[in-house]
Image (cartoon, rainbow over all chains, first blue to last red; front, side, top):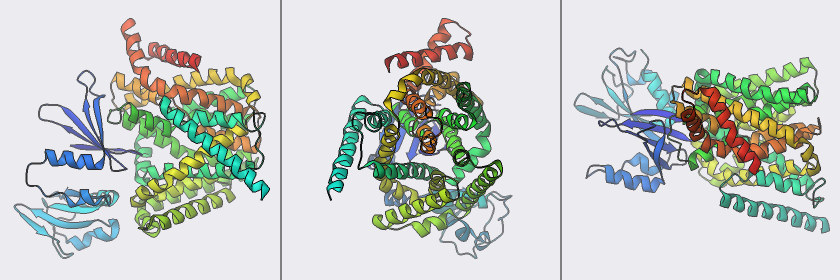
Length: 156
Length: 409
């Protein structure tokens, strides 16, 4: 999965399946979605592109999801928030430092709502929580905020 | 009382006429901009029905139209979009400038219009229409194509360049000395840089200050702020449009979406008024003499845009077909060519500039969607005809639809 920003339009998410088929989804700024599949003779060009309203996209997600999923809170509020998983590498500057030292909420407005460490999840870590290499942080905020948070956490 | 009745009748008739034209454009599946321009030509100076009472209001409406156009453009981009584009794509921007601004400047010099008009015409031929292009790509289902980010980055760079270019034009048109002009430009650059920096660092704070759950308050705050900043920018000789663009950049983020839906209808109304206003100030009788230069310029700059897109897409590693598509898509010129020409028209330099810009935009706003659609198939067809035909063969090919379309216009 890779992302490409499309200034003025939104963000494009590209996915290549195990069978080497290329699929992309464009998240428009107005909340609608476009799903694209590509031509076999010209892999740069869309063979089909389906434009979905946010409601239709929700329905499609429901159909794609394995059964028993709870609807994702973030996608339904429509507040323009995103949740991202940010990996902390073992060589990261923050390895062994506390969450408070990152000043993340002050700097970016994004919050760390949980930390995934090996097989356990730590919900709502306090500023005194000590980070370790290999942690996965679940960060929620505006798109810019989360990107900025990922940049802070990526510090070597 | 009496004059206000006449004003209402005139202005109402204009807006209603625009609405009907817009519907017609929707039927025909193309941009309403050329129809609005033609509507303006039909009324006004030397037209069928000179307007009297509403002239002044239309002029102010046009001013607001330009400001809203640029505000909305700024809202589309976040400051980080602009900065990252500038860092990675600047060669494409430079090629774009060299290939498309230079023909305009040369044409003006060839016609003996002098340096100021040359700078203005360079701007007219340089800037593609992001509005028309975004719509065409959506209509053709190409938003997910690999060349799309390349096309968008060229557009972003052009819009950013406008923030530097408009103050230069404003200063030149005001006829200021070199020293004062440089000072203006320095102020403009410093302000633009400062706004970008603040927007990147503190965009959230600004958004929070403006943000409001109540649409009415949001509308008033954003509109008020924009007009105020635009006015101050105008006072500093930086051009109101640039001020509005920078406000749009600074407001990107969560406010942008709400503002976008709120301001779109206003933008559409006043932008339509702006195109009419531009047409009003162009005497239809002055168009025939400039038709030939306009067509020649349109053909040349359509080809140079195709070359620009081809080069930029090749640089980004897009395949040959995608390169032709990128080139063909970039051809459309529109609102900003008219904005730039409008500055010159209101300053009253070179009387033929307005008619030329009008004819030029009329041609390319109609031809642009056609080149977007057909450049690639035609280039492929030519390629098959003479195997091994490089870009030069394709260049000639790309000219064909342009000529055909011109014949149709």
